[in-house]
Length: 217
Image (spheres, rainbow, N blue to C red):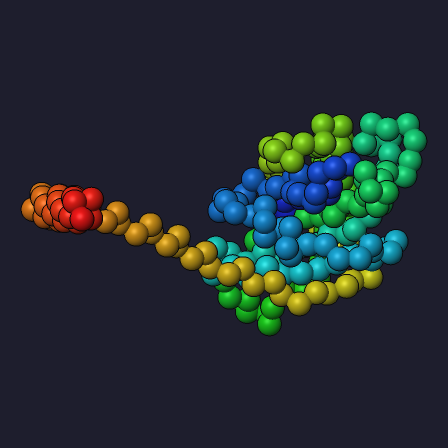
């Protein structure tokens, strides 16, 4: 039976820490995926029963299909007794959480359609809770993101019933190589240094002659 792998991810912010990727898929070619998720996933809060779908087009790796939602976190899951959660500027805290899967380079059926196995988001949320609690309690931007493992479902699994909001594809720009630093200027030749010293001595000699002439007059 054919099976499909879905990888959980999570984006949020802390009391003082700006938005960052808290959980990132540990799939092959995941290098550089954290900023891509920050740019591709997000938007306004999703109403109950709505899911957001977006394709990420990558020139150097397989494309990705993102299924996610933007919701308020449960304060208890963040390790708090009271809620809802707000940051230091009284802005509400949201979770951008979902799952993604890789797509073939060429889709023979006209392109990917919004679809996610039933229960995939619930399972991903359960996996993400400890990572979010750790992130919220430490409130550190340099905290290393948690690497998520794949959730495997049959390719013909029942689909999650949802109202879909489809965003335009997000195209990842190929990274440009860093511009090399210009080479340092070559050291002056020995002859040129000797010439400059002679000029300085000549100038000082002329100045001494002028001063002597002025004082004698």
